Each structure stands twice: as structure tokens, then as C-alpha cells.
Image (cartoon, rainbow, N blue to C red; front, top):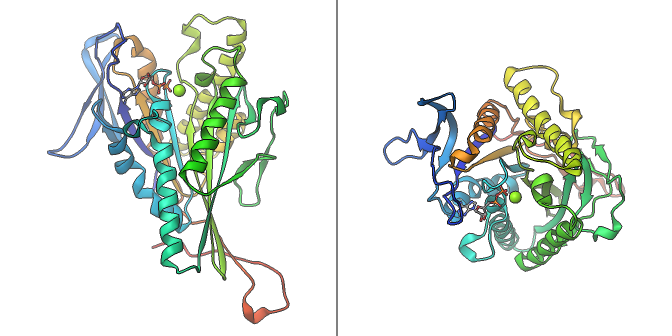
Amino acid sequence: MSVRVVARIRPLLETELDKDIIVRPDGAEAGGPHTIVKIPNPKNQAEDFSFAFNAVYDQSTSQETLFTSEVQPHLKSLFQGYDVTIFAYGVTGTGKTHTMRGGLKLADRGVIPRLLSGVFRRGKKIAKDSEGNTTVNVSLSYYEIYNDKVFDLLEPPEKRTPSGLPLRAEASGRTVVAGLSERACEDLRDFEKLYIEANNNRVTASTKLNAHSSRSHAILRVKVTQTTDEMIRESTVSAIDLAGSEDNRRTDNGKERLVESAAINKSLFVLSQCIDAISRGDKRIPYRESKMTRILSLGQNNGITIMFLNLAPLRSYHLDTLSSLNVSSRAKRIEVREIENEVVFKQFPRSAGSHTVQRQPLRPLA
Ligand code: ADP
Ligand code: MG
């Protein structure tokens, strides 16, 4: 199983002055999805470059279609114990936040609220079908990485320390944020309250900084815990809205911006280097060179990874679009080991008296 890379071309916005559409989907078999993105060679407009992806969605694709086709099928795997990672990559203004968070109107809601809704629905069904033998708990962490520092978005901005939270490697090999808060969530309403509050924290913490959100990576981690008398199964789904991948050297940046740009450029640059190294089959992958890549650990974490490549169709984005097409089309070759998380078996009745918890790996699904 490799990383599934899905391109989404956003529509032209009413407010946009540039109406020169240069990015087009192609390569659909009769009735099937598009698989190719075409864009002119900036040095020779008569020539098109083609980039192949697992799927390409055009400007008419609704939030619902994108979710049902690309995310919903993995809910089952999540409850079977696989970790799922979904991230949005692309230039600022191409629709990453629209894809992940979306708008408030029901039809505009993005991947994240739909995902949570699916998690709660499936969790309730599993609990009900088990006739009370399985309890399902959902909890949430939400943080941002800004200038290579980690800040908890579930805590008020006053509680932030300038250096942010440290990362720690778990015994399982997974990298986690130390001291991150985790909130239990009973239902979609709970989630929405927390999520809105957290997004407000993000804004409040950054009133002095314009366009802060396009300069930080926002990471939502949803933990699903299924508990029966015999076992505990834990799996997580992470939804990541990455900082804009534009080349900030080309835009007018003030001093403060330059510090930020360096950090953003660096983490996204390290990400592209990791993608290259993995797709070349290198032994040494430069994960450790930024916090974002340590956390994302592409190709290292078990489970399922979906990369949304967001694209604006316009000429004004030409060079940045080309560079993000280049990075993401190489990501397809990343292999992800699809292995369930270990189930923790509780003490069996036979071994009464002992309070040890046995860890026993389940065999991978055939
Ligand atoms: P990013 O997070 O990548 O910077 P946004 O998600 O903020 O980009 O999108 C930029 C603008 O384009 C927003 O006004 C958003 O509502 C709009 N937009 C993006 N994608 C779509 C889409 N698929 N359909 C309609 N509007 C979109
Ligand atoms: Mg955004």
C-alpha cells in the first residue's frame, strides 16, 4: 500500500481577476475518475506537462463527493485498528482549509466535520451491535506547528510557552507531542464546540500576524478507543492542514515574515526531501530535520495515508503549482506498511490474581 495522492482543482472564485485557466484534469476512462493533471510548460506554452495521480477531482466536485469517495471508505479500517493520516498540501489560496475544514453550511462542510460525524456514527453502531459489550471512546488533540514550534490549540493562548511543546518517541516508534492535552468527545456537537474554540485560539494567538494560518501546520488527532472485557484497541486518525507551499522568496516579505518563511519553507522543503528520498529507496530519510516531518513520518507510520493536493487552476499560480505537482506526484511511490495497531489484552479470567496487561500483536489482515 502506498500513499494515495488525490488532486483537487478548485473553481475560479467570483472575486478573482485572473481568469486564465491553465490547469486541467485529463485521463478519465469512460465514466471513470480523472487521473491526470495537465499544465503548460512555462517555457513553451505550446507544450503541456502531465502529472499522474490516484485520482483527480475537478472544480465541480462537491465536499460530499470528495468525502464519500476518498475518506469514508477508510472509516472501517480505522475501527479495525489502522491509523489513518489525511493531509492537505498546496499553495495558499488553493483550497486546503476548504477541503479539510470547509464552511459552516451543511453542504460546505469539509473532510474533518464529516469524518467526525462518521466516527461517532460508526462508534455508536459498534457499541449497539455488541449489545453493551464494546464501549467506544473518542478523544481529540489539536495543535499547530509554527516556526518549528508546537502549540496546543486546546489550551488558551496565555498558557503558551515561547518554546512550545517537545516531541517524544513512543516505544512503538511513533512520534508524539509531549504534554499535549486530550479532550473526550461524546458527539458531533461536543466536537464542534471544541473545534471552533480551538480555531479561535489559533486566531487570538496570532492577531499581530497576518495570514498566520497559511504559515502554520494545523494537526487534528482523533483517537478512537474500543474497549471490551478482553481487550482495548486504539487507533487514530490525523487530519492535517499544512502551511502554504508557495515559494516565499518570490513574494514581498518583511523581516518577521522572513523568519517565518524560512521555517515554513524549511519544513515543507524537508517534506519534499523525505518524499524524494523514500521514492528513490534511500536508507536515510531526513525526517528528523523538522518537527512536521517527524510527526508526519510519511511511509514510516503504519496504516493508511491520503495526501490531498489542492490546486488553483489559474495562471497567476503557475510556477508554484508546478512545484507542488512535482513534489506530490513523487509521493505516490511511498510505501506505507499497512499494519493494525496492537491490541492490548486485558487480564484473562484464568490468570486471576495477576494484574499485568499482556501486549499481543494481532496478525495483519490477509
Ligand atoms: P488555503 O487554505 O489553501 O489557503 P482556502 O481553503 O482558504 O485555501 O481557499 C481559498 C478560497 O477559495 C476560499 O475563499 C475558499 O472558500 C475558496 N475555495 C477553495 N476551494 C473551493 C472549492 N472547491 N469550491 C468553492 N470554493 C473554494
Ligand atoms: Mg488555509
